[in-house]
Length: 171
Image (tube, rainbow, N blue to C red; front, side):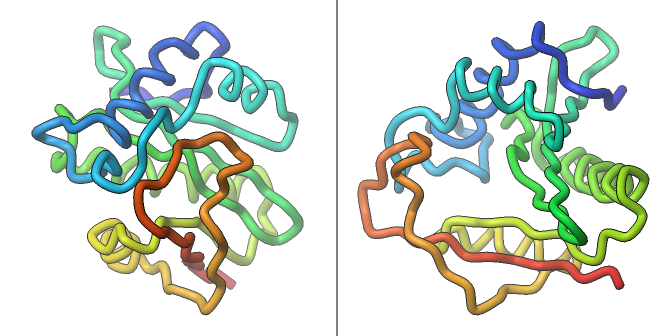
């Protein structure tokens, strides 16, 4: 297993990975949003724009045969690092890969900006199992709630959804 920066040549695999992990009704996926959101989580154009941002870092976890199994993104703003675009292929879930990838992203953020004081992430309110997963890794729910970001074109909710903020303070 290898973790590296994502390349523009990875975009097709990344688009497939994130949409399978979050939007398909895959029998092995515990991260699916299929029952609460319709449409793609991300598209090629959005990924291309992300990879061209100077302050955004997307990492991929690949197998020995260079198949992308997971990804995670970090964006540092001041003393805060937002973590997102986090996905593990459903066939690879429950093997501890997500935990390794999250730890890697947190470590990378501190290497890029040693003064980072907190990690921030956002999760759909109905994804209780995901919120609990992050809480087991030191993240705490805040009182900040946001409307589902329809303007970002990340899918259409089929029920009322809000976005919850989680923070892990490190300093």
